[in-house]
Length: 334
Ligand SMILES: *Cc1c(COP(=O)(O)O)cnc(C)c1O
Image 1 (tube, rainbow, N blue to C red):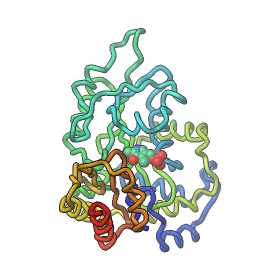
Image 2: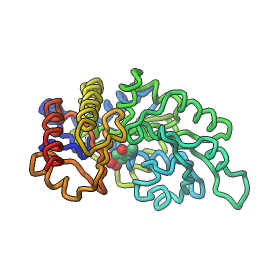
Image 3: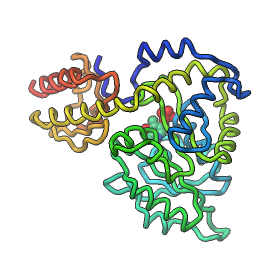
Image 4: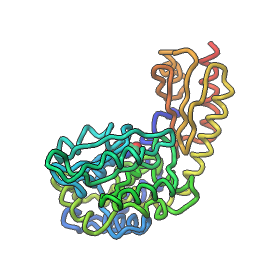
């Protein structure tokens, strides 16, 4: 099966499984797991931060980050389509009593900083205390630029806010910008990165930041049930991914371009976006059984309301892209 539904479907490679099988382990809640400790040290260094925390998921990583910055009755400002606002079950509000303050996002994926600045509340008992500004990069495959990051940092500094990055796909942003992961992470107090998307690790995210914020996040991880014991087994997969699978994300970006160009050439499809490892496409006429028919041809892609997001990752080769294009062209021709 050629699976274009998400980069989360990527599977551990044989080399990654071998690294996992051979991992030294200990009780990570006690700080005794050498592989988790190495993953945290390595990721912190890669992102130029003082400390790091290994967590089971990106959702928990973002939540630990938000909880480290904000207390009960505080709020964070966030783009209205951001993962930390839309797709995390309202965790900050449900579990942290932290209020999200959404603001519009423009076509580049950047939140409207002017609207964000207007949303900062004065010190008045009517209002929640504004504490934090959250960005996301990449966002729907789009890359925010260092200038956009810096503008957010300047705004946060003007109002004494913390700055958090949901960098689930920060690696794709760095590869696309041609800069180091640390350069992308530089303006942020905390950064959450995923190991289990295009990097291909089976599980896990890492929250990086200052010693102080990561220490707070570590307490929250335990409270949230994220304290794991011999987690070195899975951390070894993440470490292998960081050491071997970042540069190859450029192949996914090239495959996304190849897929987009191929789709454009098919009658009845328009490509509405292609950035980093994601391709967005729209059918001229809705075709409610297309996903099902493509599955019959060995291609998994979600088409809903005539729209699809297709995601490239390390289990989709250039040949697979061509095969997928043939399947889509054949189904739309019938
Ligand atoms: C996937 C993702 C997350 C959450 O990661 P999970 O491991 O699925 O919880 C957070 N933010 C963004 C932008 C993501 O794509």
